[in-house]
Length: 402
Image (cartoon, rainbow, N blue to C red; front, side, top):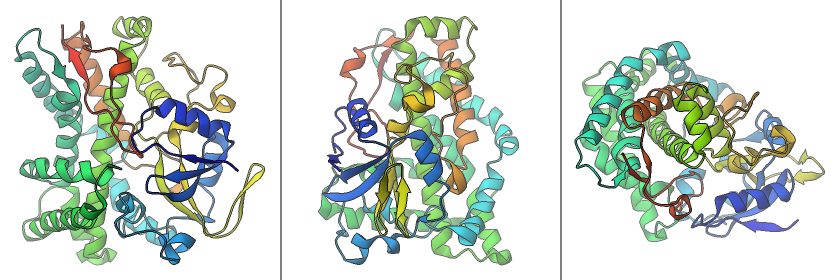
């Protein structure tokens, strides 16, 4: 099996994803830093493996980890071993840690956040409208980033004063370019910041999910302080990064497909179609780290060996022709059905999917209603990917608002 090295600079994600699909449903890959693992790259096999009880989140199953082959300063160590939370456990422990979060993020409860999301969106658009006419605007920094960060922070009870530091630390957390000597301190700083937030909520509870997690631990649900801190970090990280990329990628898709943009703005196509097709075609999450095989697992005509690590390559499987037909590589907001799994599948499916969809469903139509002449300020070919293996993210999104 030929090993495919994932590009730490993410210069050509589409090309890399095509190579992974061509390698078959199970590809042997090398993560930045020289770490070997396997990737599932086809839709059907991904659904199978994401519900297979032999594939677990316990890093102690990983042979390379047991043998001390994974350095503690590996730039992606925070994604492979982020501490005990609902992300890193299975079975009863996973259900215990996930229950409160899932209850807070049901579709019905998320819908109650709509008015607040609309108000935040309007405020962001007002700020954009106040900028000097004719200036290039970084739509990511000025619109796509603040909205999800403010929404998830309000939900979790995180003070806006912490946003600049969080942004700085998460940039290092996700990047493949963080110098190894800075990784341990970055991890310690993230832990300290979230511990500070939890301690503040313990002293002065509020109407937020962090306070609810603390109260549950005191009422007998047996969440440890480490589990609360790590769950908070997980939700903040996933709760804003995915939605930023979803909004940015949807704008790029529309600006590079003018006929479909026209159909959407004329009301011929619903915004829901744009969101779902963006999630499939240019998924916010390119690869998800990391699961481990407790025994040999057959995947098509190959075998994922016991003790090996597995990543899910959503960027590859989102364009799998076996699932989506010969037009899988095309953006088509009329696609139906569109049964993608961009938010995962099985027990670890993203609990924040409804929130992300709601934010994009509010933000995108409001953006284009306010600025119907919006267009990219540079050719799409000049947009730059950030060096992040897990997130399909851009450095910036320069636009002209019109």
